Image (cartoon, rainbow, N blue to C red; front, side):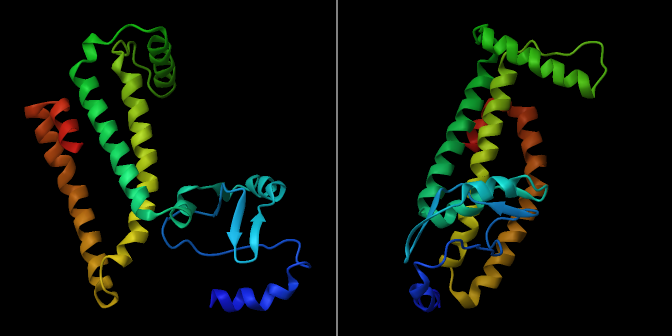
Length: 212
């Protein structure tokens, strides 16, 4: 189908000046419109540059955002994306385990002290307690690692969602999606309960190590 469409517009290659591409999202859920962060698209008609001026104008609209995760799985090998995101997530969990284990031995670096002061300032906006316990220098590092881990898992989720149809036959795909969704919902219910039990009896370092 795509080859036929390109063949029909091939004679207009020197005439068409701007092409607007609109399509549904098959892999990542989001609200509004998602723009790619690419500078060009490689097509059978050649490399087509993206009109960055028009993209900048569209970004001013409230329902439009740049979402690289929605387009990443179409530009790179999905297997490689899954492997890299899993590796980075494991490194984040190992780092969290080490920080939780040695949080009292962290050096009093100026950047960590300023980060704690920044977190304290944010907390005072939402809570009015007389004192806040932001003396632990591990807090900024924990928040940073959680941010990295959540961002990486966003990219990995998009790649895994698009990888599932290649793992099972078409006639069993609906059943596979049902099982996948059921396991996800069960883990959302049981995961926090099991995690809380393990934290209470084994501590944070063990749980982070288990997650890695």
